[in-house]
Image 1 (cartoon, rainbow, N blue to C red):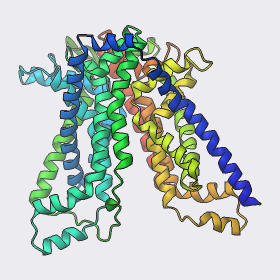
Image 2: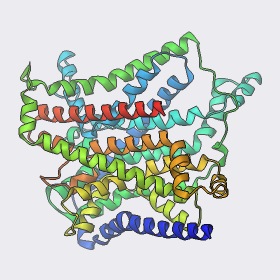
Image 3: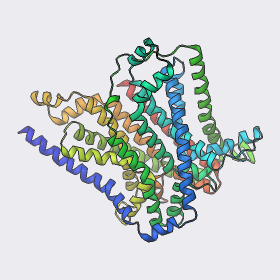
Length: 525
């Protein structure tokens, strides 16, 4: 009787979740694509800026992706394979770029290497950071922390035994790398390559600030929708920006490489060779400077009277930002981020429980819909929401910003908790039934308790990303619901870089505090 009741409840729950996600993930996309007509296609494809924008987007994204992967892999090896000190400090520094909007990285580069940049004047440089060079540099800074974390996580679970056997057989380092390391990394690297490429090609923050006349497709879409209110043209460009993400999604689904699912029999021995450690220290130190200097200079700019004319210290920029309602917009961001963290974490946990612990054909449908969200760039999602929910009760409210952020970021936290719940003994439910323990109590006392570190990581992920995102919310916010991150665009457009720096600093401080709080909570568990 209890079994039938549970199955009925599971079925109803899955149908409810599938319906909700279909409305908020699939319906907006279908609506956006349905707005594409011959006039919109003709307007975009006949534009003089279209072909150059496509070329610029592909070129910058490809180059930035290659550089990002090289840097990230080298950093991951330095941290996980060499016995250097200060790993915790380096780890914190390398994740700092994830805590501020991408647009802030572009501004940071301008402050350091722009025409009036600190290093430009100090070293009397004649090179220009604007255009291709600046977009690539800013994109690498924006994307490498994500790739670094993903590669580091993969290297953590690699078994040393094959390497040890190869050494005994006299196989050299190059052959070990090509014969053992690359095959092990093949599947995850494909996912990482497309994840980084998609992040870069769909971002408009960096190219908007530092691209100059070197326009990319994402900037063209931003200008069409925000500047000219040409939603049909925006829908065409949005569909084009969906292509790399969809290709990545399909490749990830079809590339089922079971060979990489290994267990660590013998962990890697971290190298104590003086040369390896010295090179690791040098590389980590150089990258730390490359991360910290632009962020620090941009943050310090917030306390300058008028850059670059008068660098006298002042707190008037804080007052100016507050007089333009920065305090209200910060409160908006906090409300949105807290709601996204709470609701998003709860939704992900319950969805993952239904897909990982109560498997049926409907579970696969729900799982597929949830991971589909990963294939939708933020700008495309925001535009599709603007087209789908215009005139509805939640349009022009904070509610739509909460929903769009949950959908925008749902895939990664969902996969975190899905993997975590999948690893827990599959017979626990049967044991619970035998002992007369109810489903709710099992979820609360067993599954939630065992996966609490993952739950904290999910909540942190939702909060931090909601605080700093500028993509999905750009098309949906109003003067009363605007998140504080969008003030950076506003200040930059008015050449008030000092106030933009104050806003970025506020976002960075809030996110650092939240990350620290969640780390403390996790350590106590």
